[in-house]
Amino acid sequence: MHPRLRSLLALSAAAAAGALASWAVLRDGGGAAPVEAEAARPSSEFPGGKPIDAAAIQSGTLAVERMPAEVTGALEVHSAEIVKTARELATRQARISGTCAPGSAIRVVAEDGSVVCQRLPKGVASVSAVGATPRVSGTGTVQGTVPGAVGRYQTSGDDDFLVVPIALPDGALVTSLTYVYWDNDADVDGGAYLYRSDDTVVAGVTTQGAKDEVRIAETDRADPEARRVDNSAFGYHVYMQISAEAGARLMPVAVSVTYRLP
Image (cartoon, rainbow, N blue to C red; front, top):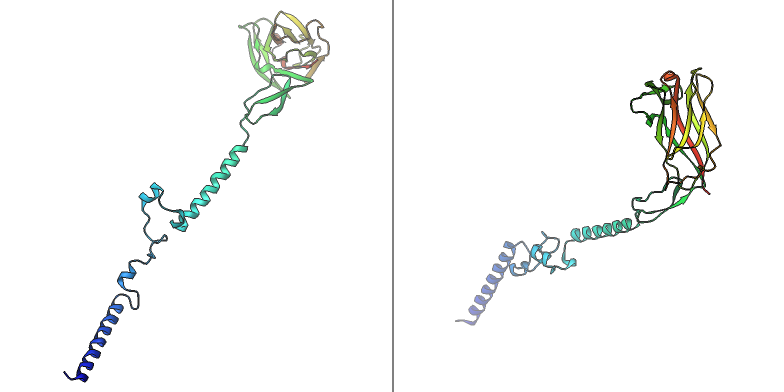
């Protein structure tokens, strides 16, 4: 073959090869890398570069830095909230579970809810006639209301007393007794008494006269032999006089006992 003809055929073959290569590039994305290189590039459909394998996450083989930014960000926020909650719980005060006896008050509350009590130098204990019961079970009584007070009065039976327990701190000294009452009966007077369970009168007051108003009677005298409260040997209760004859005209309201601690 003529040398010039051989050169022309070689140039034609090279040109044809180049045209085929260009057509393949255009077919695969117009200037993109070859198909083999495309398979190695990270996919834009997954933030982590490839689908996350659940098995890898469960086994712990997936590095945190390979996880999507949305996941790592959520984990960081969640961890910070857990730490914050743990710190708040560590400093939270437990519910108060301790109590103090009559005549004392809470001085200190511990982290576990227990309390330290402090005895008060003086105090007052009071009872209401509304919650009292007649000494004789067959005596009829009802709750009554007058201007400025609510009490209880007798409706049937022989003249009786209302009785109600009172809590006083052990070792306290009774200093006075105050009786609140309604009495507008000119013929029947009333009274209130602090009794010890051995039938000893610790202190007491009586009423006199009749008025259409709530009144107060008080005394600062107490039996010197019985004024010291001894809860280990005795119980204490209040008596309030009532009358079927007087009915609603004689109505006990409340009794209070003041005391001091030695």
